[in-house]
View 1 (cartoon, rainbow, N blue to C red):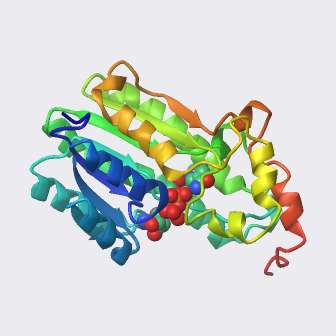
View 2 (view 1 turned 90 degrees about the vertical axis):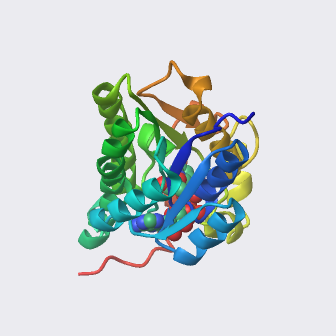
Length: 265
Ligand SMILES: NC(=O)c1ccc[n+]([C@@H]2O[C@H](COP(=O)([O-])OP(=O)(O)OC[C@H]3O[C@@H](n4cnc5c(N)ncnc54)[C@H](O)[C@@H]3O)[C@@H](O)[C@H]2O)c1
């Protein structure tokens, strides 16, 4: 018996990192899984591993995302579980953010999650309900310098989660996970490109290590399963205790500032 036997899950950003680990963990617990990613080859690779379905779609394009989710619903014979996980960012000081890059970061990290709700909720309600989990970040709960649009968008994901939990209870439970520093495609350059970043981050983390994608995937499985049946509207921080001290990546931007090119006109 798996924790997710009979569940039918869609995962955005499922081609890499946290999304890929979650696809594998969900499948291991008995769920049928559809992987949606901007990178179609990566989605295919993960979907093959879990005997699931792969879609190439950009979460910022509502029609493309809705098309993928509707097809996944048809292929799997229903939809019980949505993991809104695609996201990424850059670093810059607020007055130096390029206007288009600001819009891209907010659209990907916030509007992309809204698009997931908008496409999936009608199908989930029609099927009798389920569980939605979205990926926020410690950047949204304890922001650091250099990540303004990302921090604002991730904080908004926590607010969107609470609103949705109220709107769709008791039929759909809605929660978010707020990862700390996790070694994925997103953070690889940070963690392997400099010799000081791993000791710097490890020292700030009471549990004394950098996170791995499975640290988040296991919590997403919990939130998708009946083990969390009385939890809704929460934004669960999974950071090894890093933000107990204050903001998570504090000091990082100051160290990188010297390497960041000057703003465009
Ligand atoms: N890694 C961390 O330390 C960390 C910390 C806090 C939050 N997060 C969040 O976790 C989530 C997953 O990130 P990750 O660390 O696994 O990174 P990752 O880069 O390994 O995986 C992200 C995946 O999302 C896909 N993607 C990017 N833009 C997309 C789009 N517009 N439409 C569809 N797919 C898209 C990428 O192709 C990639 O496969 C993100 O929302 C990120 O902000 C990560």
